[in-house]
Image 1: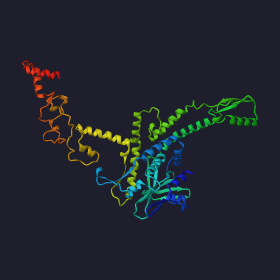
Image 2: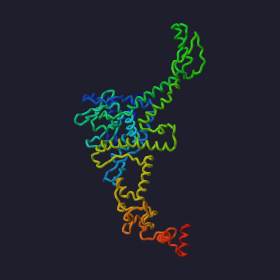
Image 3: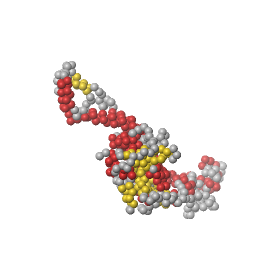
Image 4: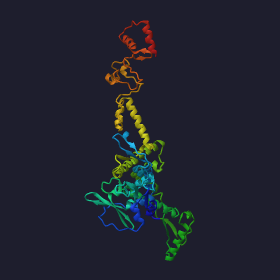
Length: 496
């Protein structure tokens, strides 16, 4: 079964929604008699690189498979949500949960034969291999009907037809029996940035091409190394002159007796003065293990996959494993989620003309790695509020939330006491600032049960701070005529 036969099997022709029956034109043309070849404008070349070879590499190179599958599988686990925007603040947005809502129904089940996870995985895998992913948009039978199905298209079969006025006039989809032409509103095109081509995205496989070739060569060499009895290439040499028949017979007998892993380490019997001489270095001498590590690291770095997520446990520990996992989600997956999310809102959402103010978003709150970052951020914000660095409404504005009536008041930690309320007049660097910065009887408290300390005598070890300061001042000024009561009181305080 060929590559496209597998895809064709996964994407049947018809899409059925109630009484509406609408099919994918690409799949329909693939399995039926082609109606006619396209003879329109000239398509835009994709540039260097063979997209079909890049797709095949997914099945041929283990590290490409590891990187692409890790990225696409992780990305597909983040569910899509649909919101109705009722204001600028996100707390005013209404999450669409009605299973019969046409937009939610489409993103939840893009077509009758794919789940949302499979759908997102196919988009991501195509982008990681060739830098481009295409969706065929299937509409209802009515002229104003919104999309009812989305089908992934094979990216190596798509050609873009440029337009001098509208930038793109359409898309050509190559099939064995001809071509299908899609209008611009029938295709959603996801792509990576490509400074050298404004029509097609840059394939990540392109910079990884040489590393993949070297890795495949080293794998093939080692395969042949073990196939040839796990010994390096060599020659059978002799000083005698051999006839052509003797040469062929000797070679045939040698390969029969010593070629292959099963025949390794068997005793060889040589005649006619033959000697076995090694002509190449062994795999150990060529340091193929180190070479494979180098190519592996190059491929992983191109795709932004940390070693621990590729199953490489060398130098791994619990702490750096957690950090690599967070880094993968923050620096690799999140930007890709935003790219897909932006394209869906730019191309798909406007096609639902009867649904206004809609927004499609990935629910990153369901990702554990993202939740931990948000928990750390929340702890930092609470510390800012406690220390008076930010007010509650300032933080709410940053998060796009509505302000609250009590959010412009400083809510300090009830266990903290300002220094100027402890009896110190001017403690230098400890001076917290003008008294107006602190709570006053005119300023409301953070909690109704919280009591302000202004006007209340400060104490230490059960004694009034003012009394302590008077005693210490008297001692400092040389006042030795302290009453026995004061002397005893001062002694008790100093002991404490």
